[in-house]
Image 1 (cartoon, one colour):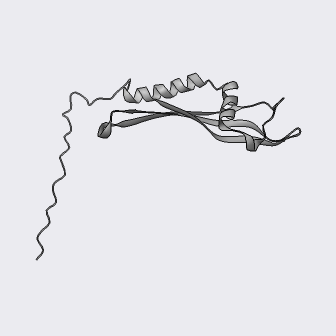
Image 2 (cartoon, one colour):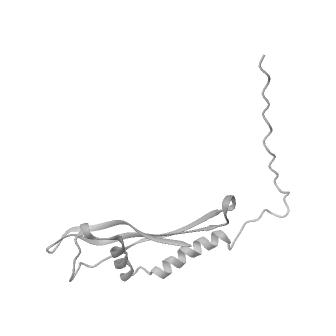
Image 3 (cartoon, helix red, strand yellow):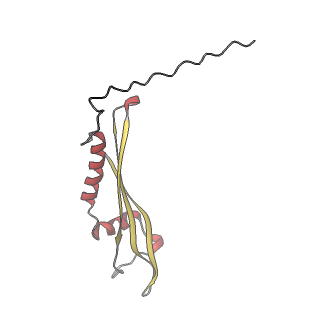
Length: 128
């Protein structure tokens, strides 16, 4: 399974004390994919969770907005209430439920199965 985290948007206060462009909220997304089978039988399943994390004004060290990295902001999210393990488990469960659905809706047993006829061949008339 492949799990990835991205920051989709940052909300900033233009000024906070003597600092500029101070991040106060980050919108994040956790995506997961898993491919089963190979070749023509390969099928890819996906899951996602998203949310936001808010931050207190910085105290101590401060990274100017242009110097921020996605990994740094994700670290802030994980330190401020985003449960990385729980979110990744949720995404994994979404994918597992697609691969092996816990609930299915089979055809009703008292109705005859629906048979789809193949399309009729198109035969063109010879040109006159």
